[in-house]
Each structure stands twice: as C-alpha cells, then as structure tokens.
Length: 291
Length: 256
Image (cartoon, rainbow over all chains, first blue to last red; front, side):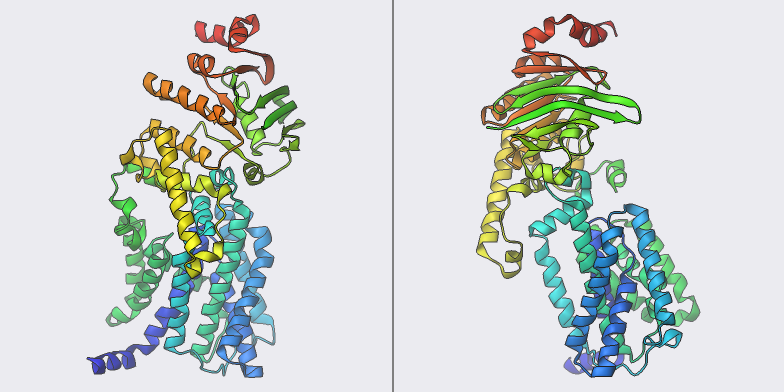
C-alpha cells in the first residue's frame, strides 16, 4: 500500500506540486470573490512576488520562508498602492483596471534588466517541496475556515450580497474591498514565490492573462464564493491535462468544454451542487436575478 | 434620549427640487409619520438621513452631531437604522443570518479570537444568535422560516426580517420605509403594535407610509410633503383636517 503510494508520488510529484500551488492561487482569488468583487491581477501579483523572492534567493541565498514572505509583502504593498484607487471601481470597471495593471506589470518585467527581460530569470534555487506547499495550503485553509465566523468574514459576505445594505449596517464596503484586495495580492504572492522555486526559471510569460484566466476558472468551476470549491476546482482543472494526455493537442478543447458544461449546468460550481441553497426550493428567477 | 433634526433640508437633482426647506424633529420615544403623494420626496429624505444622498442645503443632526457629510456606514454606526421600500435583504443569507449582520454595530468580539478558538468568540456567537431569534419572534416571523434564504421568503416575511435586522443594531433612530406594502389587515395591525413598542423603548421612529389608517393610528406626529416641500405638520387629527393636505394628498387619492 505504502509502496503503491510512493510509486504514485514518484510518477506524479510534479503534478501534485502544481495542484497545490494552483490551489493557493485559487484561494487568493477566492478572497476577493467572497467579498463580491472581480479583481483580475492575481497572476501579476504572483509574478511580482516571484521576481522579488527569486532575486533574493539568487543574490543573497536566503531561505525560501524568508524570500517568500518578503515577496508576498512586496506584492501586498503594490496591491495596497493600486488597490487604493481601483477598489473604488465597481464590477466590470474594476476587472478592466486590474487587467490593465497586469499588462503594465508584464511590460515592466519584460524591460527591466534586473528581471532578465523577456528571457526571464534562471537558476532559481529549487527549494519548493511538496510538504512546504501543502503546509502553506493547510494554514490558508484553516485561515479561510475560521474567517467565516469573524466580523470581517460576515462583513465580506454582506458586501458580496448587497453593498448598499451592508453600509446601512455600519460595514464600510470600500474598506472590505481594499483589505481583501491586499490580502489576495499577498496570497497570490506566496503562490508565485513557491512556483518560482519549483521551476528553476521564470519569465514574464508565466504571469500573463492566460494564467489569470486559469485561476478564474478554478474558482468558477469550484463555486465562486467557496474557498473549498476553489481548491477543488484547482485540483480538477490542473489534473485535466494529465487525464486527457492521450488527446494530445486537443486537450485544450476538452478543458474549454468542461468549463462550458459547468457554467451551463452548475453555475454555482461544484460546491454549489451540495450546498444548502441549492437544495432549498427556489423560484427559477430568484437566484439568477440577484447574481 | 435622542433627537433627529431636519433643518432647512434641500436636495437638487440637476435643477429639480426633490426637497426644499424641510425642517422638523423626530424625538426618541415618538413615532413621526412622513406622508405625501408619490414623488413627494419621502424616500429622498430617508436617503439624505442615511448618507446616500447629500443635501444641497441645510443639515440633518442627531443629538447635535451632524449626519450630513458623513458616509452611510458612519451614520449607521451612530445608530441610524433603516428599512428599504424595495426590500434589500442579503438574498442568499437566511433570515437569521440577515439579522446577525444587522448586529454588526454592537458586536465586540475580537476578530483574531476566532483563529485561536477564544471561548469569548463562541459565547458572542451564541448571544448573537439568541438575540436574532428573539427579534425574529418579536417581529412575528414563523419559526420554520428562520433558516430559509431571504430571497425565497414570502413578501410579508421579508418586510418583517427587514425590521428585525434594523432592530438588531440597537438603533437610536429607526427609519421605516413603507413597511405595510403588501401586508394584509391582520399583519398591518401587528405591525402597528410593533412600531409602537419600538418607540416605547426610546427609539426615535420615522414612518413613511401610504396606509392612512396605519399612519393615523400609529403616529404621534405627522409631517406632510408635497413636491419636496413640507406643507403641514401636527397631530394626526390636525393634519387630516388641514385643507392643503386634503387637497394635495388625500384629495388626489380620493379622486384617482
């Protein structure tokens, strides 16, 4: 039994690590989604932290914990600077502003000499290990689990449901959005640093809009406002290329199909399939109307 | 004892006078009715009080503290609660959860406590739920609807949860916007008793309502708006005898 497990791990350790890192990325986006706003800069924040942490690892040789924390702090700081103006935007405007920020970050990474430009940064020490990834994931899962019961957690849920009504009960929607945005940037930063120290090499292309869409897909598949769904979504979507390996170049089509099917038949995601609200009798229009 | 004061409140929406020179008081322990035809500016006055709309002239104060100029959540924290005419419950939360959010202003549990399983946090949670159950009982929400998502509750129940949620913040001022819309006579009678009991606890209540028997039977004082201006105020009996009111409001209702 143990031997079989060891064998499975030996075969799939890379995938298992990827799932864990992607799950952390998914949690980072889940934090802002739980407060009801769509900010699409998590890949960019992952990239900022990855560059900061990698440069420190290469030049100073500091351990992963230190570089990752500094990287995440840098991402959070940048998140705070751009979060101040952009979290006042609503809906699609916030989405567009954050996509714009992501593009700017890419251009900067492509042109700075310290980031290695388009050629990227090589020889990053390979310090990320499976247990480190899953330790981080466990800590974050605990954080998200307990967050629900705090005033901050209730405030996030209230703002997600109706920010005007939330404000009339003393909750400041702008503050909730700002801090979830900063927290989201920090968590994305941790994921970015772990990714960099897993892969020896990073380049601006690793942090583009494509990765952002991947992260969004994890959350949508799992269930937009559920951190558990986000992690599950990351696990499923990250495994698909492996599962559908026999389809070679047609794999992306299957990925797209899975996404389409989920959006059409389970708009609340996988988490929504067994959550209470789905089981409760609902008039057909009520759920969609408020969504 | 709290007093909500409107002084010369005026609101311009791009040249349209939504409100003009409105002055009156809402004292704690009393129910002040705000009536007037559709579009007279009643809801606008509530929105000015809660900070959603900035007054162009004049001010709203609560015990001398200026409310106008503050943001909605700051005004709420001072103890100004409201219900919405076009119900704004948190749709995918249960009735009970809606009321718990209403209590945000009075929650004192340390936010980090939940992460170290502090017993005080658990106790606070239990207290919050007990308080919410008490309020849902008080507004007369049937027990089997407590755990139901707000968006699937019957209309009348949604209005009741709105009031319970507003009471959860232990308000000094309660602004109720058309609570009787869609209620049957029995429900309206219960509502009347409820509003009177809220005022009896020392809350300053302002009631915006079209149901004249409810207004006349509940309010200690009535203010009448027409085209954004206060055309009369006084006791329910005085107001209902006032010819300007009869013409502007009761008269137009009767002829329509």
